[in-house]
Image 1 (cartoon, rainbow, N blue to C red):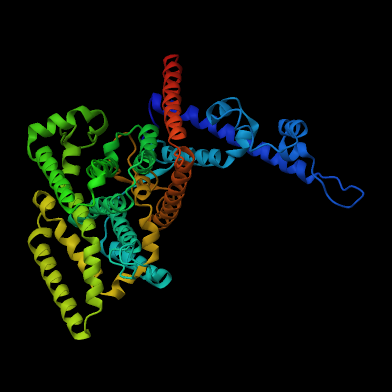
Image 2 (spheres, rainbow, N blue to C red):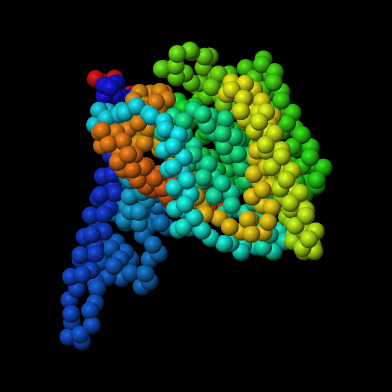
Length: 539
């Protein structure tokens, strides 16, 4: 594979921004080191007590303010210059030191993106073909389950926000564990190209979308927080990382279809509950809102002309063509196919979330019934679920994948519901989790995106990752081990960095500062792109 071809304006803009931030961080670290070294060079006076000069602790300007006003100033010069952006471009030493950790996080994030580029767009590392062995695939997965059970088995006693009792129906630990074990199978499916599990992966993705509806509905219905800050935090979480991957690696967003799909369904939940939200406490209003959601999706996806009319303006965001595909489809086919497969399940997640307190109440009453009756009810529920699951498996799941895809939008709720019922059938099952999968489940977005470029390998813009990254040639298992360690470590670190940068860019309860940050971000982006076009035009 050749190294990457021509540099795009987006790549040049990110490079300029990254170098600027990196140099600023190094300068801030130098200033911090210099200040600390000056503090250490203290002078012992005759009384035997160490003292530190005010100009070291406060800085030169701060010292003069102390001498003139008699009071110590507040932190740096915030009262003079409210905007950190201007202080940054003025190379304000106090500002750089104060924001040293933010600059470090941004520099580290940029370094990871550079590593992505080196792994997937250059010849620095090799590549190998995917190879599937069912025995190895299952061995590795069950080995991970065994390790998780031996090292991270936990019993939780959290109380319900509705009943203040430890019912634990669909608790957060459980849903994070659910995300985690599905995510492991998802990425292993890609790594080993285990096509026989295609239909299972479709169910897993539906479960993720179901949790999008369930989790967002639960949050907005209970917290009633429809603020601009919350909206920006939500969009940041889903799109910050993937946006930079698209720019640096010159990919369209639909290569990472999970991100635009979850963004759309999240926005649908946000809008459905946010509009006339003061009436959300009325059951009829919620029923009408959910019915409208169903109606919108039916009209949008089931009527071709309506679909084209609604989505064609968003082709610049959602259009995609695989350059290596044997058959080329219309640019909007990928969005229609991917989002269409799970177009209804997020609404089912909303319904399950709405009835969550009711089901918790049922379970609480069930646990208080006489032992024989309780065991009979639980046995009947389990038997019905197993029977339904078996029928679904025999008549739906085992279908050839193209046939299965036609049934999936209308049947994916069956295995999800069966899993939920069986996973929550007893108090013990509800309280047990494997924390290792829960830990992995917190960063499924980073796992999904990162695998494309430092675990797998596509080699060119918009291409599917059909090869494996090879750091240790001719040793596939050692290569798998090393790449997996790097992959998991980087994904976790990017998850942490995304949250750190979110706190710096999207302040809580300060809409004016948030608006200023957003406007500044737009201005900086436009400036960097203009500078990039000018530089590339001079070549």
